[in-house]
Amino acid sequence: MKLVVCAYHNVGYRCLEELLKQGAEVTLVFTHEDSPTEEIWFASVRELAERHGIPCLTSDINEPANVAKVREIAPDFLFSFYYRNMIKPEVLEIPRRGALNLHGSYLPRYRGRVPVNWAVINGETETGATLHHMVAKPDAGDIVDREKVEIAFTDTAFDVFTKVTEAAVTVIARSYPLLAAGTAPRIPMNLAEGNYFGGRRPADGLIDWTKSAVQIYNLIRGVTHPYPGAFTHLDGKKVIIWSARPVAGSAAPGTIASTEPLLVGTGEGLLEIRSVQVDGDTESPATRFAKTIPDGTVGFRSE
Image (cartoon, rainbow, N blue to C red; front, top):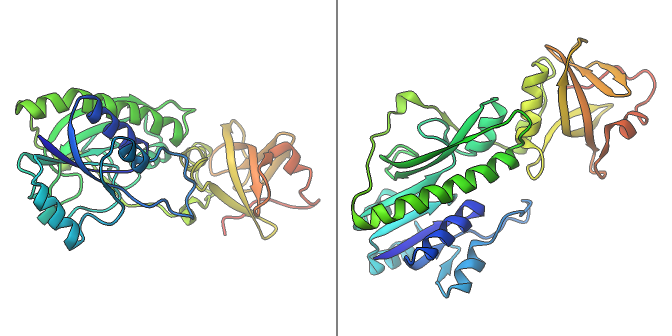
């Protein structure tokens, strides 16, 4: 069997690696150029493909010349592992035995973009990885296999992404032999049981101090390193909060209730801030930052 694989990020790297371990004949790989504005903390799919002598393109699979290449290969399967471009229906129709996507949630929950970050931000206690057939509607085709992972209250999105990556490899290891043998299940997806989320921008990390301490904590751990971070403002300066935790107590939203430790009021409870970064300076402990706060400063602002 011949495979075409679209892949990026750690999930793309590890799932492609698993297919190669199983002896799959991957004839062409599509990936992305790394963005100069993004922190690149993940493994390179292109380097993996090159080590195995597999042709690798960073141009969009949907471009006419690339569609023609895929038609010429006439693959049995097309796989998408964290590929960031929506693959057009005309491409999905080319592989003889199916086009499948590995999604980083337990579908149909958290369809759409950045599912791990959204799950942490929303305070979920579990998520997962799902292999499903691709159709024109995103993350809506028949399910082949799923694996759940736990989200601990102290997990960051990075921690959960690591768990989801392992779950993704587990799913591919189980599913590929069944797909190759033609015995893999196809479970219709009930979209009414799930939800859909769009992408996130750095600006979406703005903290709303009227929300509860737990909600703000979930936002912080959902977008902390290696993501852009949750932020607020103090005396006209942007302050990224990289680490915090909710604690008991009360104060008006955004009000500095204490500087040792640095406690800030929220809509419900207090937030203990542990690590910050002010206007492009290096990250520092909140206790050190608190000593620089001018006398008379009331608190943080959400704008």
